[in-house]
Image (cartoon, rainbow, N blue to C red; front, side, top):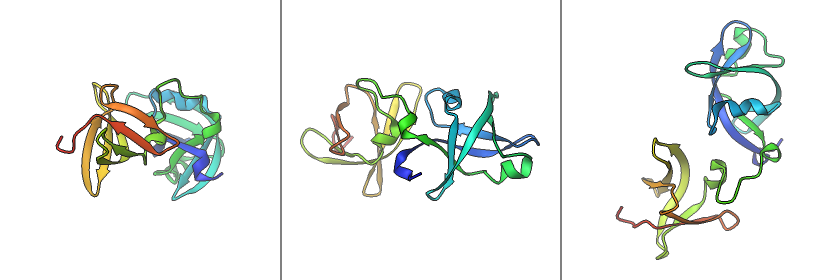
Amino acid sequence: MRSEDLVVMGYISGAFGVRGWVKIHADTEYADSLFDYPVWWLGKDGSWSAYTFEEGAVQPKALVAKLEGISGRDAAHALRGCEIAVARAELPAAGEGEYYWTDLIGLEVFNPAGERLGKVKNLMQTGANDVLVLDDHGKERLLPFVEQVVLEVDLAGGRLTADWGLDY
């Protein structure tokens, strides 16, 4: 499967136990929603392999999962650092005014005056709201991802308009 047909949902942070289970860090709104997908694509450096999800559980500090064909701690540990992705076609459509984070990454951000604020390189969750992390030629700029700031998202045009000044 091509990388552009996949959406990264988290990564494997290590082995869990001795029976081939893996610990997972999920980058999803609801951590256990990753369990809704029967096929996970694991990869590093753009090379992906499909694994069938067998079973999962929510632990106090992480998610854990059992994947078909992974038996034993060594096999699970070998997957450490692999990104976990699902096929974009399997994702439910985003609702009106909702966006998958992966679709926002790479958008050029401008204010209404046409001044370039940077390019979305990441997003992060805070207690109050999500925050866009912009790269402005090596300088990092943070913008709250809230309706009062984000005026327009044009995925097709690769552009986001934000009510934000260069001096903020």
